[in-house]
Length: 243
Image (cartoon, rainbow, N blue to C red; front, side, top):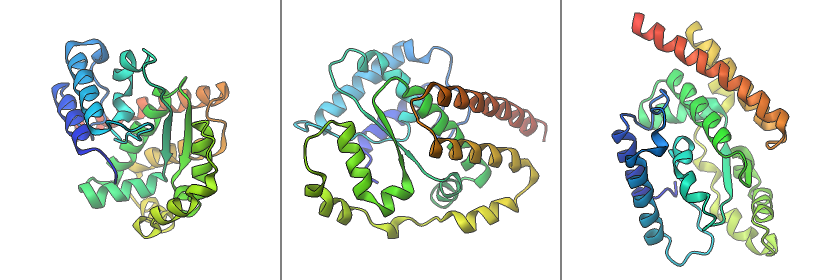
């Protein structure tokens, strides 16, 4: 799905060095961004991007791991050497959980928790940067509207109509293998232990669909939901140790 295999390898290796993985729900070690390992990782990432995207004027760099690693790039990004815009793609948590179950054999309950972990982290770490929240359903069914919003963020002067045929041919709705309606019924019949995670994921998803992403009230609301998620995550960890 248009991810750089080299960047994925670098990020996976770095997470392993930190004693973590892409699918771990625990927070990364305190102060990880400032250590020697992070400095080495930033250097490797920069060299890889210079090689992989040499000559590109506006490369799109995609790896979900950046949702939890973005703050580690701050010393590099804040130099102002590059102009950076951030595109956050929001997909229904039920669809993501089932997709992870199908592709990675990850139980649905863990997929929902991972969705919360990544979405809340990406929103928090991207604050203060030019950014857009792009809805997955809109990307699939109305790529022209998404293209217009991206060009506006980039302050690009091109006429979106020039790119519309390419955008429409690039998007294949058949690649959307998971659809919310049946998944919601299935997950609502899951164990009670999943209920709190399910309800919290739905609250976060509903909020991000309805609000001005950069409003202070949105940040406060998301911080409150993030605190609830952290508490729920700790309780779940304790319950798992006791069972």
